[in-house]
Image (cartoon, rainbow over all chains, first blue to last red; front, side):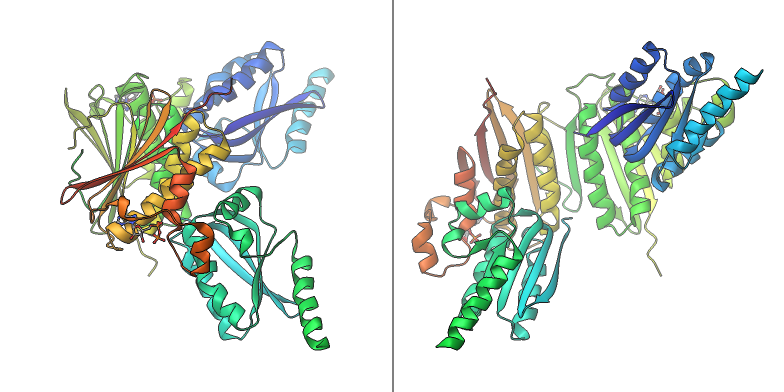
Length: 123
Length: 123
Length: 147
Length: 147
Ligand SMILES: Nc1ncnc2c1ncn2[C@@H]1O[C@H](COP(=O)(O)OP(=O)(O)O)[C@@H](O)[C@H]1O
Ligand SMILES: Nc1ncnc2c1ncn2[C@@H]1O[C@H](COP(=O)(O)OP(=O)(O)O)[C@@H](O)[C@H]1O
């Protein structure tokens, strides 16, 4: 059986989900549960950290596709950070960089969220 | 395929072999090569560190049995250190603690070798 | 007792459950590395096989957990072949068009990526269904030795 | 195409090479954990199966690398069963006496530990050879649920 876990923390008003292990058709529901829980709490600014993700298949990618529309409709976003080369290559093959912003680290992604908030406030 | 590697260092006149990975009928020859190389160099005071050993089967245990006689005939010994519980249980089941001295760490095993040397010199 | 005809290939048979995907990946990983592929190429083959087997569980067996999936690896000349056999619903892949990835996302579609990945990651993907008997998908990748 | 009779068990078929032992261990590990065994017990079952397969490679096939080893896992009632089938030389285990471990070492014997480990680690070990046809070893372990 694949091992896959998520852990979520709050940083500067942004939710950071850490992925760990193998994300496939068997474990995709674990990630679905993490997104569902944030959305139910009204938390739509989400950073996903891929540092400890060893594997992803299209079933895992499908989870991002399933939630992104709802999240963006609520003025939120999913931003991706610390993707290793292997996982990035799969994302790239599927054109995901057109759809998702990818950052080197959590700080940069969180800053981006907070810049967006400030420019909204300035309006 | 199992991954198994050894690395050998010299400490206070004693040779320390570090085991890493999975020691089975496929990889046993890697350990044989390490022992053979020490014996060819006339190095008979040997400590084997099990810290990074994840698995051992009887084929791996057989390697120790194959070399111990020759090494003791040359006034040397194989002493075992840093065995985790899983590996120790297998050794124990086979009565190995009757045959080999097991220590918590490299220092204790090396000290034992050097005490033996001193008492020889004192004679 | 079962007679084994093919003396030159490793085979894995598992039930049609997603929890067996990791075992299938380990099996294919071992075989791909044994055939001499580097980690990068082995990873591509592993993902392609995962996608094929996920589809079998989802579409051919519609999550019925007691079907069987047989994964057979072999080397034919300089080609590494993974054959996957199931006894679920027949599949005619000609009816599935390869998605235009950009167009695809514009339509906010979910799924449909598995077949695309399989074709992109492997040199060749061939489906062969004999309805009521078996479905077979054959994934091939050339072994290029470092010259 | 091969017909699959047993719809309720996972099976792995590998060639009789020691490099396949790790794959067999992974297969058995997944199955044992799937059956609910804790890591400690799963480790015992894995080691017992490794020993059985090592013996098949060494003794039944005498290192001939193109034989097959079929490993089948199943649950029968509350018993976890691993069946291993080969087509090498027949084996009559009655002729092998369980070694008295201390006596054994006094005689400076090497080897002979595998059978002892298998019997100690499992609840039951049964060999069944039909010369010229197949050899089967059946390793059993009770599944004790944490009450
Ligand atoms: N093994 C199969 N058996 C039956 N139908 C399949 C099989 N594989 C793929 N399909 C069909 O092809 C379609 C495209 O598959 P795929 O690209 O993997 O996307 P997804 O599975 O996410 O829908 C599926 O939706 C399904 O209708
Ligand atoms: N599968 C087998 N086929 C044929 N002979 C076997 C088989 N398993 C064990 N034996 C015989 O039983 C003996 C004891 O086996 P074992 O305890 O594993 O020790 P070892 O393999 O180290 O000799 C072997 O030496 C061999 O003669």
